[in-house]
Length: 55
Image (cartoon, rainbow, N blue to C red; front, side):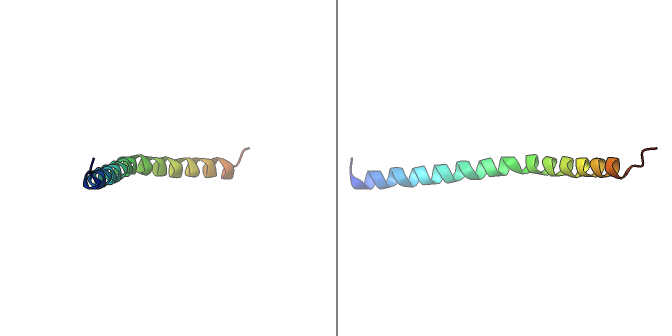
């Protein structure tokens, strides 16, 4: 294996790894948006229950 082949393999490895990491982060965006929405929902619910007058 020539040194040139080793550099090509490293280059392909870096490109593939970077692409995979970017795709993982892109796929997490909708999950983060849903989690933020539900977090806001629960915050409003808990604040409503805490501030509710129990008679």
